[in-house]
Length: 252
Ligand code: XBP
Ligand code: MG
Figure 1 (cartoon, protein in one colour):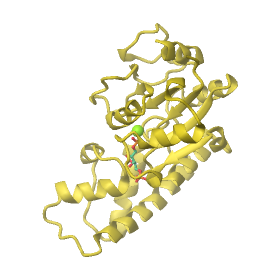
Figure 2: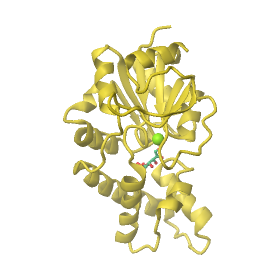
Figure 3: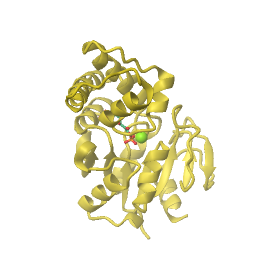
Figure 4: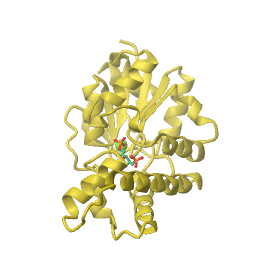
């Protein structure tokens, strides 16, 4: 079994986008529309149980706002709010305000140099990904990824395996020849469901998620100058992730 490709989640994995990116963008859209919907840091953590921004807004109304009377055109309202939210998010990302997580840029560069193929499988809106890559990873970096599988391109979002299966199919790859990178339980259920060995890097929102089935759970990818921490899974006795580490993890 040779490692041929790496498939990456975006939100929480490539960058810490949720708390200071998506969350304020939702709040700004709600405020623009004159709604009294306010998602603080703690509430947003609960809402992250549901992937997809439109799905998350509906979940919020159904489970947290029994007082709210839905208008007849509620689905249209949610769609409009989501468009506004995407404008706010992409404006923020275009300022380069959302940095890549430790080790991400280095591992991507090393993987490219080693001839590994790269893809993306995310539930977020496609333009969120391209703007983030362009401004936080670097100009032209979206071309590093053969496929950017994102958003409503599949009917069922994570934890369903559909988005990973879509990416694998577009790249003509067998799951056994790939590794997935995730940060959340929903993401892990999705990647495992598609048959992918998965490396998890946690963040503040996902620390206490159930990562049963992950090959390894790490604090982050680490850097040669800044070791990461292994939280669970196989111990390869290496203080940061590089291509040799990924090949060994894939074999393990
Ligand atoms: C990401 C998501 C997305 C983003 C918001 O999950 O759940 O909904 O929070 O993006 P994952 P949109 O990292 O598992 O892919 O508002 O564009 O949906
Ligand atoms: Mg994620």
